[in-house]
Length: 465
Ligand code: MG
Image 1: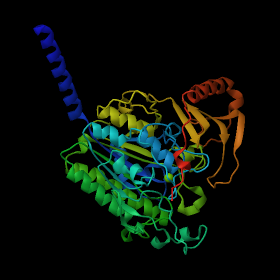
Image 2: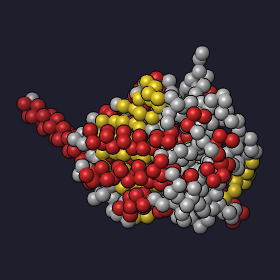
Image 3: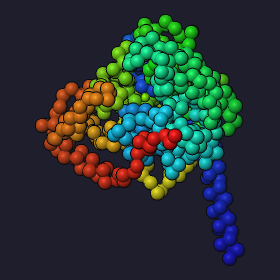
Image 4: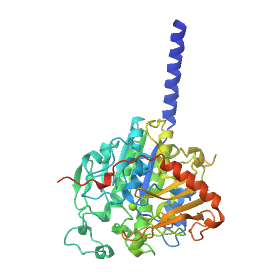
């Protein structure tokens, strides 16, 4: 008995030691998320006139991810995928009737989901959300009810709550004025300012983010910094007016680039750079129907709202000096759901066993030590699986063009097939040469569909009066 007791004591102590070691090694985690940024909108992703020296430097010091995807081509479901590590169809955070949440929505992220912030909080992280949330604006859905210690930001899109006497249609976007959109700026559960002064929003998000990092320099922290921009209407502060050859949109990106630069600079100043992983990406592709007020998907086809790659592949960077080797360009597959799984793995958290998590731990792949564990990307529009990528091959079962809300869905049987590594612009359908690939992708699609359980859509719940 004494011997067995001793053995169990040793077991307990070794287990605690392992836990403590894992915790001490866990990095701080920062996720910088843009809104409607296109694959071609950064200097380091090929834009000829938008200057992004800070993002370029981050890319040079870390890894530039050239085949990195989101979980959906519009805001709400895409953010749900990042926050839950799950395709939005599993959480009810998508719909075929309403594509995102609106100020008149009564739904939001279900309490049963384990958000990235909740998972990290359980591991002892201090957590903050600064920026656009868009997973429900009622108190029970806001960040502070979902694992974040604090929240500062506009809770949904910056073009919502348009005032009655603002010009109709798209007119107010071409010469945007703050007072056209009565969007709230919230601090935790309270409205701090309304309408939010959007001209200074990027600067104020940045100040809030830097202050959170500084305050928590001696703790493990998770900062989620989802910018409200460059979603239309476009605003930037005085210092960035008229700076970019790309016009207003370029000014907005250059201010975001300035903001991004403050994060690694602060981490260097506080000597936290070797112990912090920073991700940069966006929620979905550019809103092309807004002409020069929308971004560019570069060589990718189409944009926001569509399941062409321009709608769902994002310019992405991951930075962790000393752990992720500098100067890598990785064409390995990844998604924002993998940010969830990678972060929780780095924090030593265990994933819930009672649910399917769609993310993968990319740590070894980011270090350049192995291939990405991800082989498949699912492209959903609402609840419909429109396309599936397996390795280099992408088969479209259905397609729909620009995000205008009234365009036609076209079904394809057999599917249209592209080799994205040969043909990233999705120009040359090679279905008739690769019946075997199509058969394989169809099997993968059916196997995936068998894992999906229908849940009620949160996006269709009206606000009760
Ligand atoms: Mg968006």
